[in-house]
Image 1 (cartoon, rainbow, N blue to C red):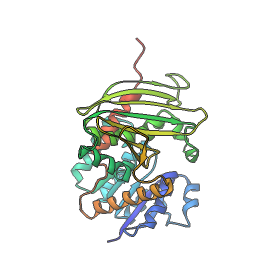
Image 2: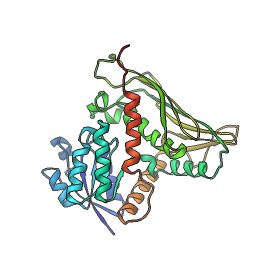
Image 3: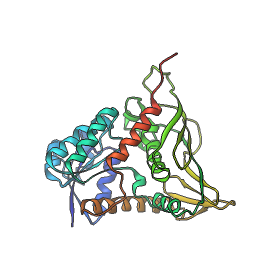
Image 4: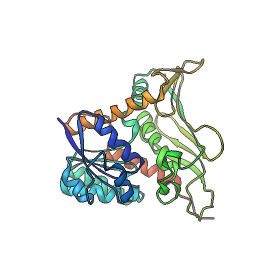
Length: 321
């Protein structure tokens, strides 16, 4: 069965999914729109550009919502009103109370709905979760998340100016959230024990964070995080799960490595392009399963809300004492 897809938002990620949906046999991209006319013009050769979001929703069986976070809620609600399946970018929003209502509304609708956390289907994540569930690591001792971004926003996101701003951007919302989702699947529900976040223009400014440390706890063990941005050097994105028998890590998103005490060894290969292509294809495989009424591994709205609650708690700057 071919599913008719509409896309609201044609920025970096939305444009990438125009191509990815078109390459997958289960999908046909039938409509798209972006509030920026230049973004629409740039993709007009590849997809039918509609005059507005209502027309996109009307034309599709499922809508992929890829606008900035402040607007996710309104388009999810529009899809619910139209009875259309939903694939939404994370986070659900910025206001936690509004997102809680959104989760309730999605649940009450009974519509197929998922949130685009890459580790909902990436082979690196699925293999890691399976290894933990099978007890391959022995008792879990801890998880360590390390991040560094030489540029924020990253080079390919430079046109998304909102990512540099504190109100809805920053790398904790954009990147750390993916790993909190994965950690939740590995460790169970997470609780934020403490965090410290610094901003380049101070607590009263508008710029997104420049460094952060946090410790989270779970029934299976703690998760510690340290992240930084700016400064020469390669980007670092590394989640390590340390067991008493073996340790595994997701490196650079799609690589999965293991150690029994010696050097790290790749379990899925080290060709990032091939691994990334496989991750996108797997994501859409799972999305097709959802739309066909089958079991799938994608993140649901309740899981996305749990991540959002942790992220917004992490970013909350306490008032001066």
